[in-house]
Amino acid sequence: MEGNSTDTYTGNRGLRLEEPLIFEQDAPGRSGVDLPEPPPVQSRLGGLDRPDAIGLPGLSEPQVVRHYTRLSQKNYAIDAGFYPLGSCTMKHNPRLNEKMARLPGFADLHPLQPEATVQGALRLIDTLAHWIKTLTGMPAVAMSPAAGAHGELCGLMTARTALEARGDGRKRVLVPDSAHGTNPATAAICGYAVEAIPLNDRGRVDLNALKDALDEDVAAFMLTNPNTCGLFEDEILEQAQAVHDAGAFFYCDGANFNAIVGRVRPGDLGIDCMHLNLHKTFSTPHGGGGPGSGPVVLSEALADYAPRPWVVHGEDGFSLVEHEDEAAQAAPYGRMKAFHGQMGMFVRALAYMMSHGSDGLRQASSDAVLNANYLLASLSKELSLAYDGPCMHEVLFDDGFLKGTDVTTLDFAKAMIDEGFHPMTMYFPLVVHGALLMEPTETESRESLDQFIETMRHLAKRAKDGDAQAFHDAPVHTPRRRLDETAAARRPILRWRPDPVQGEAAE
Image (cartoon, rainbow, N blue to C red; front, side, top):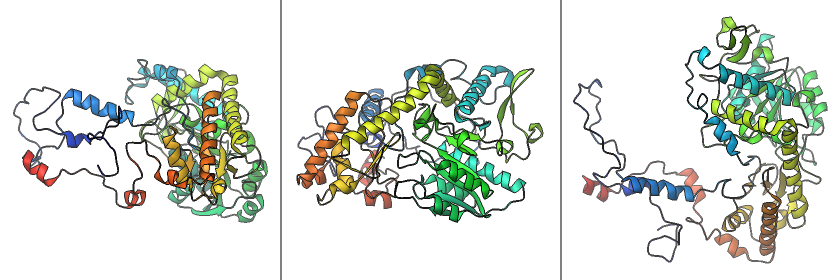
């Protein structure tokens, strides 16, 4: 099979089974269910009835179970091993959280239920909002945004609404060179021109460059702290003062809040709004295109412009403020989404907070920083650090240690796969050439970190000893090898189509 050289007839390698697409396993008349024939009904489709079969594959139940079991065995997951993706925070999701989210009354809610029947859920949202405000030192929070990027949009739209309310039509947003790509994208979506602010030689925002760029046309400055280089912005108080002196708002990308929970309150740093990725800081499931949640905390200057809805507590219990005539605020810009937010993620996040307590959350962020600095201290001789000094929750190396070896950052990452490790984040942040960004999180044991460290040392030595071909060939122990990534990006095949001969035979 193309892209899968093997010396076995089946394509299988031991218990790692070759698995075709589910559509390729289709057999006419085969089904895992037995449904009665539907009674004849008069069509109401106005002549738009489907003339052909719907195109779903026919498989027996054992085939379906085996197919998805085999696919699951090809996935790398935090439940299988160490996942050092920097900037992404792939940490263990406690099973207690999952148990809580499956409780009746949380798992089977409907967003259109009468408020009187969901008082417990509203109380949970209100309680979670309280602790989020407490941990961040901010007076208000919008709970409805559905992801980190959605939260960014919420924060910047709130700032824009506040500016418009005072008749201020500013046109520019400042974003550091090292920012997540969603920051400039969010600013552009909100109609702002984006201006990049460079870093200094310490990997932090150049304060003088920021001050030079600030003027009466700047609406906001979007900072990530700790930043994407894994470093704390130690001039953030001066940055906030300069931004506010210019009449602009200070937005903070809260993707890395998990490094400072219990130690630093963003509200004390002069921040006006910040989104929180609940999956990064409070252990809700990460990604998959679905269960996102990105609450946005707001300063007093922006609290009156938060999007609806929000929970209030009155004489008759909890209720939602959902309409403009109910809002005792200046000029909210409307809604971010249809309903209030991702309830399942709220349950998990609050369960995580309550099971840890304030001391436990502080310990978790401290351990995340400790583990990252353990990697830094253990690997700084074999790998090359991008910036000197201690890091926060993630450590950033560059490809300097590979100079003259004919091994690239990508080659190095592919070799890690053969060793059983998911690669770290590569080539990000873009300000560092050949970046290797590693985040061990607080949930990894000393033993797993030591194994990772020894593996990195082994691979670095192998590259420096001149064994470049082994890196070029890697990975060799995977179901697929080196694919043409450029062609896959430029000419992706997004829909499976049957072989013409096979299609005619089926008919």
